Length: 262
Image (cartoon, rainbow, N blue to C red; front, side):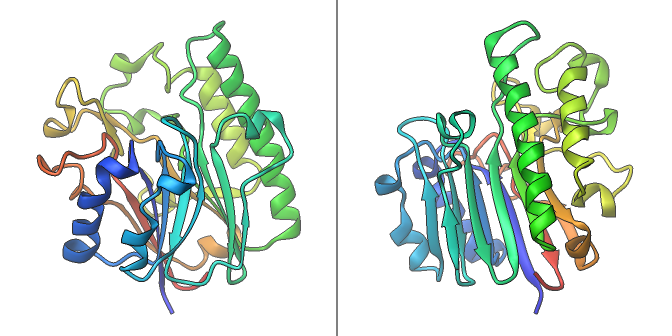
């Protein structure tokens, strides 16, 4: 049975729930929803709205900031929200669930800052720890999906104009090196597997109304282990939610992949 998996930085789940409901009921069905930047604690997450649509929810929330969640129509067998690392646990940026034989690690990587700034150093350390953690996951599990908002555009075809982004956070050489190191652990960029050269973005600046000129960045990824990549059938950026004027959209668009099995 084919399974659809989505990553979506919602920039406040409570602000976006009406839009997400419309998307799921009017536009497409999704089996596993992975949200980032939910900006609420677990008790404030609108789980009842998702449960009415047939989902069960696992949440790692934080007041006003960060936070991640997984909502699944397939049974969630295990949930991990504490990782035993201050680097990971000081901000609620990771949640790991097991669905069937597949481990899904939902990530919200720090935005960071310019080189030499404290937030840049935190982002670099976070990537190092995530690469090591992913390497261990792949040693123990054949089926792994790592997805979320990684806050890095890896290549020139992941931004609308490389010259515009030169020296900008999210496109720094040091950030790209860390993203490449993560990929070298054995996970593959699903979008690039099926669309090697195509430009498609997942984030557009609110302030410049960049969505209407397609002036964006691809910073949201679905990464999968070799076994799952062999079952990958499709992957796309769904612009339906981002092009709404009402309800107000997130500045990100969801990425949706279909696997023949997970």
